[in-house]
Length: 342
Image (cartoon, rainbow, N blue to C red; front, top):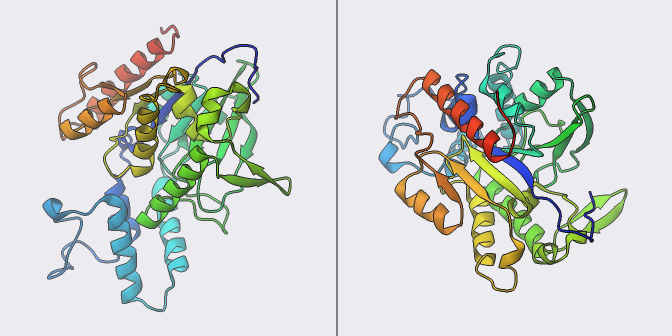
C-alpha cells in the first residue's frame, strides 16, 4: 500500500521462520528431504563413491548436495531430462509434506505462531501449514501474487480476518511444493539460489521489473525507498528487512542461506553510510544458538542475537524440549511486539 508522505510510517512486525518449527512435528530435516526425494539408492549402496549423507566431515553445502544428487541421477538415467527429474522430486516432496496438516497436529507450535498476528510471515519452508491454520481461524485469502514460475520475490498470499480486523501476508520465500504444474519454485539447488540472488540484487539496486496488467513495472532501488516514503509499495518480502522489525526463529542462518545473508550484508553496509544510516530504523532479532562464527557475523550485520534468553535445548534433545523452547521464544516475541499475553 502507498505510504503517506506527511509522516514517517510506523514500523511493522515480521516473523521469519524456518524448518526448526516443523521439526517439532517430526518433519524431516532438509538433508533428509533430499535423501528421500532424490537419492534413489538406500544408504549403504554407494560403496566406493562419495555419499553426502554419511561423510559429515567432508560434506557439501546443502544446495550443492542437491546439484550433486540430481546430476548424478540424470547421468545414471540419461533418458530422464532435468525437468522430469525436478517434477518427480516435487511429487515426492509433496507426499512427504502433505501429512503435516493442522488437523493432524492441533497443538502445533505454529498455532502459537499464528497468535502473534504479525503483519508479515516469511518462511523458508515449502509447506502452507500456517496458511491453513489461519483458514481454520476464520481468515480468508484476500489477494495473492503467484505470477512467478521459478522465483518467489513477489509471491505471497494476503490473509484477512474481518472479525478481528487483522490481515497479514505470508511469503514462502523459497517456494512451495503445491505450485501450478508449469512452475517449479522450490529453491533447492545452487543454480536456483544463485539465480535468486541475482533477482534480489536487481530488486535492491533498481533494475527489477515485472508485468502487471500487461504493463511493465519498474521497482525503485532500495536506496531511494529509504529516502522517500512514497516509493514504498511493499511488492516483496525483501522490503521487510529495511522497514519492519523482523524476529527470526527456527532458522540457523548458516552460510547456505546465501540469499538472506546477502540482504543482511548490504543492509549492514548501508547502516555505515552516513547519508542513509538514519533512514534504517528497524530491528532484526535472531533467536537461537548459532556457531561462534555465525554469531560473530550476524552481530557485524547488526542483527541482535538472543542465544541464551531463552536458552535453546541441548543437541539431540527431544521434540518436547524444542516445543517448550519455541513457546518461550514466541512469548518473548509477543512481548517485543508490544502485545499482551495471557
